[in-house]
Image (cartoon, rainbow, N blue to C red; front, side, top):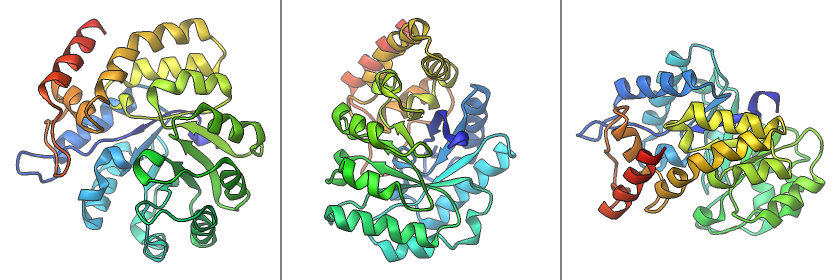
Length: 290
């Protein structure tokens, strides 16, 4: 877990006006994030709009990030879905060479039982050459990975961590209280990160870190060092922006911020669309105050 303490950033995927991948902006974004002092990069998570990219495009994005990163930071690559056998096939792809871990969301839509979720990750752990971070986000998948199931999965050989975005502090604390010492628990919710670190988490995979990596990294580092006075100061400074960017869905809000910072265009692939005008105004106001 030492490579995945602190701030990791769930990178967006920039698009040109014709919705092709904007590799020039991707290079600019990658350097912007790395220069902000983050600990690792997360490529092709949900924030990267991976459901609307072909597998070939996903690897093209990964290759570009690897090229720009040039070994400076660990890279986590997202491979998840609701077809276990298809995921197992992807885990053998040679284009994964050079990454440091896999982030894999719990199966969605088919809503497996807790035993089904466990068997899914067990199958992955048996074939993966890379450490696996499980991702608990019932707001997107339709099913919660219960704490007892997470603790079972934590015993599997290649499973090193869970990204918790359940929105429930009780769920997170049940995992934290009983997790093995070598098993990581990290936040998947920017605005709860300070509270979650106080409860014992090792960091966060962040959305706001795309735009404000330096400030959010400082907040996370202060909290991990037990300096909650300075951590609170930065948390409440960033909180209005963190709240505003999720008002109309992710990654709509963060891409709008990045377009205002001249890092990329505010372009998406359907069914994701730009945030509405009221959300833009809320983000503008929050950015002005920041």
